[in-house]
Amino acid sequence: MVKVSVMVLAGEADNKPVSEETRTVTVNAHGAMILLGLKVSIGQLLTLRNSTTGEEIACRVVYVSPHESEKRQVGVDFIEPCPRFWRISFPPSDWSTRSPEAKGNPTKQK
Image 1 (cartoon, helix red, strand yellow):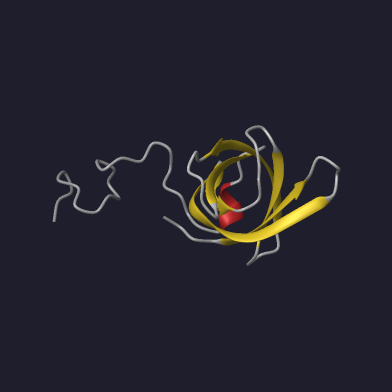
Image 2 (tube, rainbow, N blue to C red):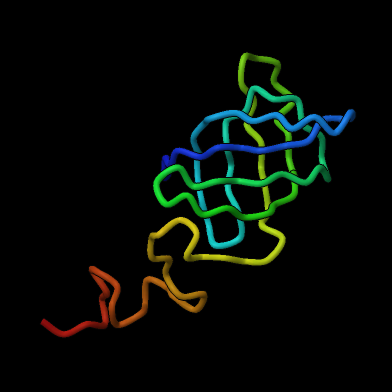
């Protein structure tokens, strides 16, 4: 769970740009789950702006929670993977609890 402040930029049907300041619920190298009050639909293109760095990235809506509330959880995938966008380190794809670097690895000698 990583909370990062982001600005979500979208275009409405009349091409009028709209935006909303919000935060992430979770992040990964391929996108994020965000809380969003804007009405969006699956497949819609958005731009996320990292409020800390000012960096922007294009993404696509891949999930909209069915729960009606002030803000919905919205899953977005980056158009191209960009693990550096969040400025955090992710474990390598082949990482497991058996990796030599893993804490509490039973095969590690003390």
